[in-house]
Amino acid sequence: MPHSRNLSGCQVFSPSHMPNDWACVPLKDRLELLYGRALKEELRKPGDVEVFGSNGKVGTHNVHWLDGPGVLVGRKGTVGAVHYTKKPFWPIDTVYYVKPVQEDNLRYLYYLLDYLPLKNLNAATGVPGLSRRDAYALRGAFPPTNEQTAIAHILDAVDTALERDREAETQADELKRALMQKLFTEGTRKQQQKKTAIGYIPASWEVKQVSAVVTDFEYGLSLPMSLKGATPILRMGNIQRGDVVMEGLKYVTLPQRLLDRYLLRRGDVLFNRTNSQEHVGKVGIYRSDDPAVFASYLIRLHPDSTQIDNYYLGHLLTSYQAQCRIKRYATPGVQQVNINAKNLGKVLIPVPVGADGLDEQREIAALLEKADERVRSYAPVLNALEQLKKSLMHDLLTGIVRVNSSEINELTPT
Image (cartoon, helix red, strand yellow):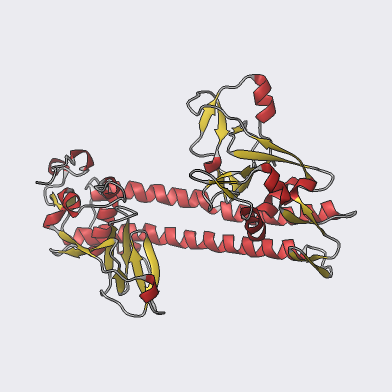
């Protein structure tokens, strides 16, 4: 007999806390989770049918298996992740697709399943997996159908705003990358170009090793992460997209001599020397005056100010071309890859030189700083919308706030 699991800690809905006209019943009473069908990548043909795996869209095919719309739930790998599609689709065998067994609104079911802690129902002992038995045992909140529709419309309006801002952020990031490509190959002086070991660059520029323009590669603090204190210590997760993000911080107490040595200053360039192949080599520019130090996963670069501008160096090392050259020096470790200071120093970079070389570097850095500001401007908006959605989902799916379709017509996305 299969082992019985106590899922009481995963129940988020209680009949006693629901409005009287709502049903609060196990999911098995209202929907089925059906297995997807395998479709190997080599068997897929060019087409516009979306193929879904546990982590979302994983490709396309020329034939659909199921008509849209559809709701999918990650079964293996990205356990419990919930996805929605309007179009005909093909779910592979790592996901379930949802079949309502009553007259529930499918879009409402999408939000309900996304709200439930399905990700906590990992029933496998190696590869993560979601058991239908466990999922079916969770209780859901089921308002009358017209109220389900109204709730879905409100949440759709927030999702539409999120999608638009995410798309705008993506476009701003793509424009910045295109600008980087242009500036690091053409410069700002409209010069003739010359062919070099790293491609075409302006005739007055030179190709140099990083070690030729950086006077010191300083490894960060190696301290137990259990230390408590008032000074934030930055780690590899704080280096994101060329920036230093002050989230998920740990804090330490340091003697003054160590604080003086490792204290970050505005414009410092940090390099992530160890992580997965994807994340090793990430570079961030510290753009704050707030006190912080950095952990041993990171290297602080000390540029020679007579040869290279620190902001120019930081942006340059985040460019696609530089990142490709950096990753060639990644060496495998036990569970991750590493790039030490010596190998980082071997990386070739294009450098404006001569009488106005530093001026051109600063011009390039200033243009890229403006582009970065545009990209970063979307983060607080997206965060506010995410928080709004989270709050609305709680209030609407628990019945704290009641709505009906006649009250939300103006919120229906177009």
